[in-house]
Image 1 (spheres, rainbow, N blue to C red):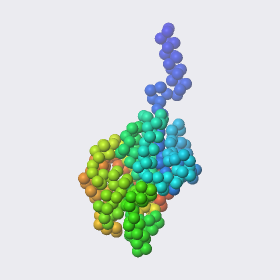
Image 2 (image 1 turned 120 degrees about the vertical axis):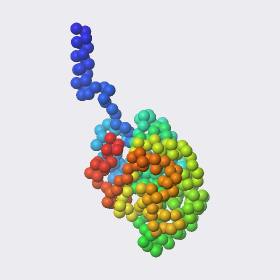
Image 3 (image 1 turned 30 degrees about the vertical axis):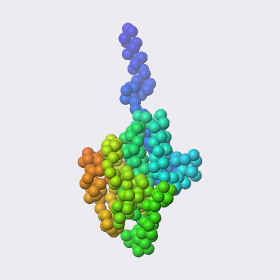
Image 4 (image 1 turned 90 degrees about the vertical axis):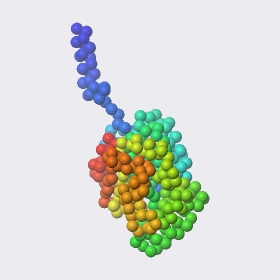
Length: 301
């Protein structure tokens, strides 16, 4: 009789809860890093993304990173706070957040895409499970936003002018976008002068922990915007870039030395099916809610 009562009690719990305890799972948290000139909580950008995710995945914990003590400071820091200092701040914030200690997914927008990749490489605890990069400039940029140097003489002159001071100590230390400026005409100048991108792309030497940590990702999703007018070249969003020595012809990730030498483990990740290349027919960071729900939500659900 006691066994019957116990069985009825357990069955009652299962029916009341809707499913057995061992089958209940909280969704994996999501960490978002915004792009240049944006902030953590703008209702028309990151705030809207956060809301979409929460609607599709009830109960999910979403952390939209704020770099600084206020929203204006967050926006300002996206231009002027040394990226390496930003990474130190974020890594400390993630490590102290009790909601992330069992792992999380990452979603980076524009420059936030390569910044979150750097988090994976430099700060493996807590672990990031999957990374989704929207228009991230993973091989950097060589061009002014909305001014394509490969098709305009004036724009080409502008980027050559910018190139003259991009790798000075003062500019590198205090202008975020200069820290992922990539000069294809003088790769040695870029390798020696870049204090951020050249490091995380293993341009000056091999840090085995960078490769090992990146390879722990279950999925690395890269979204390319086919009509992007902000990122030059747009191929950087899939780890492509200009062929070294010129600024007209681009090559894919698979044609690059980064891939053939496998300095970051991307070749092995590609073979293992961990790299996902998505494209959408829009300008920079322009996509519909329907597209997001269909193509992105499955990677974070």
